[in-house]
Length: 110
Image 1 (cartoon, rainbow, N blue to C red):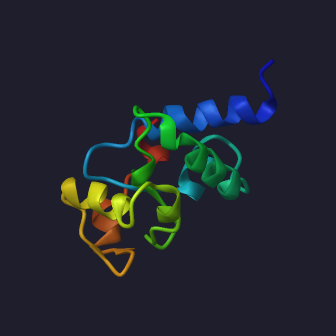
Image 2: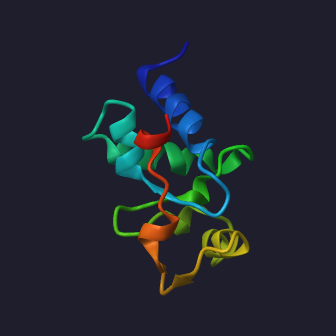
């Protein structure tokens, strides 16, 4: 039986799958485009649950300030940062540099 949160998670994953290589978005931006602007934390929970879903690029979802707040949900010490850096995103002290230039606004794309 599918629950309301399962459906929400699947909608979050559908958005996350659209984040372009080398770009990031925020929990809040995903929540907003889904019509649930106050649900950034729930988007975070969805991303935390996505670690076993290879087709969901959870590493591309960060907080509104460009911080890698979800990094502890990835295997390995710096896997989230390594994945982002492999896509050309510069990360210093868990902070994405030039955040505005790599930010993907789902509301503008969907």
